[in-house]
Length: 183
Image 1 (cartoon, rainbow, N blue to C red):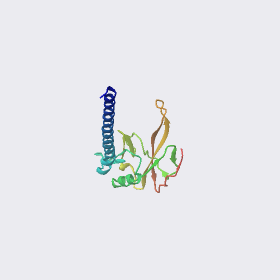
Image 2: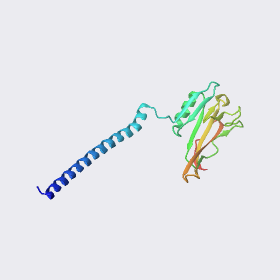
Image 3: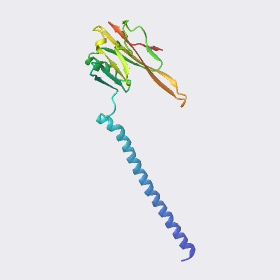
Image 4: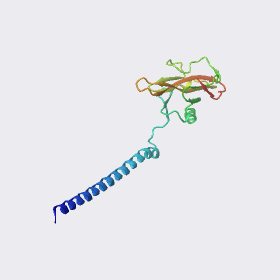
């Protein structure tokens, strides 16, 4: 066998070996991609199936008789109202998009403080949640709360960020529905 033929045979063997290595690497990549896809699907599916995903809100009773509300997502306002009613708190809750507010008036407001740091307030913001005192809400009164967003551009990232604010009032008698208008 001549040198050229031997060189040609070695070259063909090397090309075949490289092709086989590429196929093995491709199979490993496909298998790894499939495993990653299954892991990603499980990460999204398992919390929804097992119920470990954080709820939109939590309602609990404090030792002092107040009712604690912690909101994680601005959704399920009607269900939150029902859960608060079970705790003896009549509420009307509205979640509004950025730049909107409820058209006033929503009803006859009282002279009492609905939201504040003092002990006479029907509700107080504290430790990342809202403590509502049902004893400060009269029989014919409703605690009306509107959560509204305002868009702001952050200086560091130059991206829009929504900041949420809460307005609250005590309304005696009938509460008019929230009609969203520009803030």
